[in-house]
Length: 283
Image (tube, rainbow, N blue to C red; front, side, top):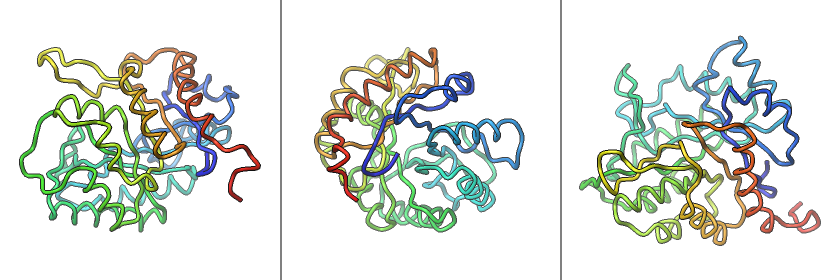
């Protein structure tokens, strides 16, 4: 997976190891949460290294807590850097969120008040992370479930300023945009149109569900096929940005590998017409 030949990939699940290892689909790549592989050895790391020998791998972190009250844990960053050196991922990404207070980690990606003070905090933590990893990371937009009144920046402006200050890239989760737009009453296409296209390094696609108790609330559940409105937003984004590496996420109600691969192939088919022929690709 390279900047001039973006392809579609899958979030990798342990139950799909054999099928993933054997799959010969052209351009297929996988993404994992690095937190599951921050060890010196053992079968789990050997499993990931075997996959990496066959397919490109990206690391998608969920616990750096870049918007948290403390800087990212130095020990965690060192372990992440060690894993990145071992796996040589095509991309490392994290979330615009917080999940840690002191030694306590919370099992969620919590919302961020988009103030100028918070902007400085997140920018500093991104820079610390990039300095340790010696690579650019991509930052993912969050899902929203309620309005916060303390915002000084719109989310696209906040993300764009983080890109400007740190040189990081963006991971645009289109399902998150759709869920947030429905829950907050904003325009999803307008949101996407405000993002700096040149900074978008990866796109995520996933399914969502309706909340069982609050009518009208959508939940970024990753437990269903990608919905038609999300596919439409994805095509709208690609029309503006050109092809970008795209990942299909499924974390609940995980189907057989070939079912996920078929959904991945739908994204690949949308990317394919946008990819230049070999003679047209930049040197």
